Image 1: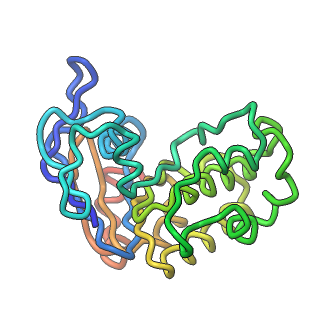
Image 2: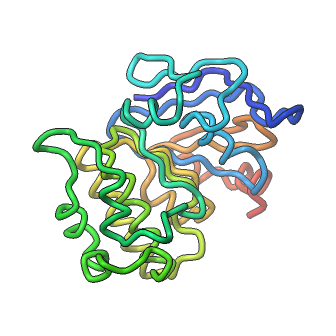
Length: 231
């Protein structure tokens, strides 16, 4: 589904991603972990086109998307749930969903499908996004991204600041989406959440991938967790 191949990304003269490579297979959840400031969000921004790499390739469904505009990448089938949610605060819940709609035929996501997935959003349909709780805003951010009918979903710290009950619900939702065939690249600090969902893990440090393995192997590798995550 996605192959990031030796990308190098800068912010001005700051060299952030230093030869990063990873893969996301169809129908899998891949998690990317690491301490704050090591380049995880920059990788997400590189894939979606906000901060394109200066070199390397990002192959999505056999097409190199480096250099494409973010809206072209989104239309190609990559959805984004950004860190901080980035909703349209002056629009209602329903309007936030409609503005993101991308038709994918009878099997695509519609507002009613998403209200079934997140019943709380149906109750808040006419409320401004700025009036929602943190958990409701995260539900809306995920629902809005699904309205683009993506084949791959990029999620940047989706559980940040959420109550445990909401985190559990998001886990159930993501597991269900995976069963429907959606691929997910998950950047996450909550290791319990990530390990419960993911098939494979990549660990980043100082702009490089320093470790990768199956989730089962990662659980046993306490030395790498301590070295790179401080746990």
